[in-house]
Length: 270
Image (cartoon, rainbow, N blue to C red; front, side, top):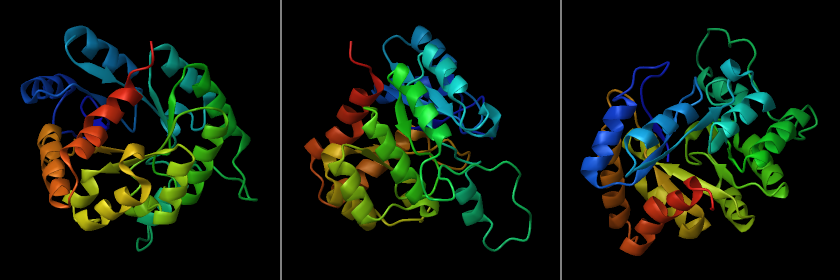
């Protein structure tokens, strides 16, 4: 919830098939496969056919290759069984501005912001959410700024969608404790990823504090791994769990955040 695998537009630690075999060996139940550059719903469908004892889900990231804030791409993904729609990641204007702070190279063209000049959610965002609602998809914030993401997640909740603040601890889109607490009160889920702790972006102590602020019943935990130099995702899950256990989280709380909530979110109600 979530993992990056190949085939992809960037080098990855392992393939879809390699991931499935590792999850089998680790006794895990499945995963959400994410790509910044392509729709992963068809890949998830093939994995589910080949590994029926596991459960995989996919989705679409609304970067430029998908046409940006494109409801038609969302509907196509939904028809294929896609579970998640992420707002822009690498093509988010705020994300690129964050990473260009001390660089002289020009920003890419066509970067995407979710808010208009008045700070209101754009109508294209609402159209995307309407398309997601048709297929009971989950709306996740991607790499947009905390201001954009919180506004989009609130709009999603008003439409009755499940909404997620994607890796709420990532420095480029860091959500404050207050925003996370408010989000949880509104029924928005918060994702924390081991990536930010493993690569020394955010301490495990701060992650623990953020989780306590929102409450375990509104938090699920991922690795966001798949980078060639990262551990395998199953290894990362074990490392993350051990570190959080060291912060005082109980086995019941860890089970809720690592397994129960992800399974509940990924599998649509029958």
